[in-house]
Length: 449
Image (cartoon, rainbow, N blue to C red; front, side, top):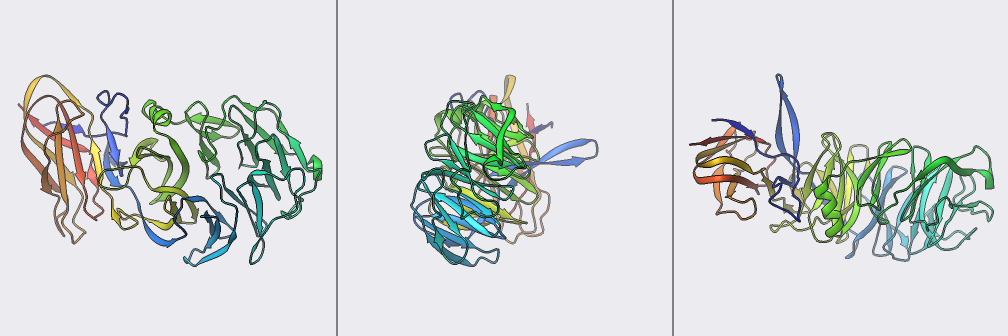
């Protein structure tokens, strides 16, 4: 009975689903070193436990500033402490393009084209300097950096004084004739994103109007696809380029990490948000879509998986995240805030975990006597069931069969599905919907004659 690697990373092209059938939904692969071999187990994607509900609309932006979390939702800025104490800071003009940054104890917010500052118990609007319509805000070397909404100008505050916007502290990002989409600071370099290009600026060490200048040769001929399709990572950043490719920055350069199936999703499924989050030592980059499950990249393994909500596995509701130490909180498109946990329950809803194998193509029809899966289970009091469906073409599947993955104390349980039928091409789909953390070995045993 040969062992076969059951599934790899998500690789299904929605425009050509039978070409590669491999999918991981609400699961991700984790390598396990066994002697000289590297095997994989399938781990459930992390869920979230609700902390509060900020409103009925989508969370626009989240950030960690000065040891607390800040979120903008329904035209209100809220502070969430690591102890989950929630405080409303003040109202802002609502708008789809929102950014948050800190500066020496202050919290800066750009929302609805306006610049807001929180330095005490409420929000204020500093007097404008070089321009009065703001697109985004960042922090760099003691300065609050602001971009002009619908323009090419950048403005910076007085040093360590985000409330002061001197009229001469500005410059024009003019290496490429595009309007600015958004600013982002990575490793003390200001990335100025435009629709068709990126310009890099650095500090000069001088004061006031001479504080920043364009970096020599610091231009990329790829822009940012949309305002919310970028996020900071530890010591780097990720974004969806104007060419529909996902990049991670490396120094002042950038490296692609996306795959052709993801390129199809970006082109056809309405990419909505890109954000970064962590759980159990894994660092994830997530891209959500308006009409499809999210795609999530595991930086540790370099593999993509998918995230979805509900029994129909529709789009993922989470759209923003922020971390302080080991604590990560997320925000949803319904205004909810939750803390990320390893439990497969997302805001009270058990995650449906599904894995679809690559299609096994055989030289002649064979009768599949059995398919056997293993799960490292037994620490949970609730018995879990695994469902299996099989397909001849990788698109349409037969009826589901279920087997127990064991109860409390039953470790390394084997789920064996017998009398599976005749196949020339075989695709297998397994489903787990129990509220249990149940690692499943990605290697299955197949017996066919």
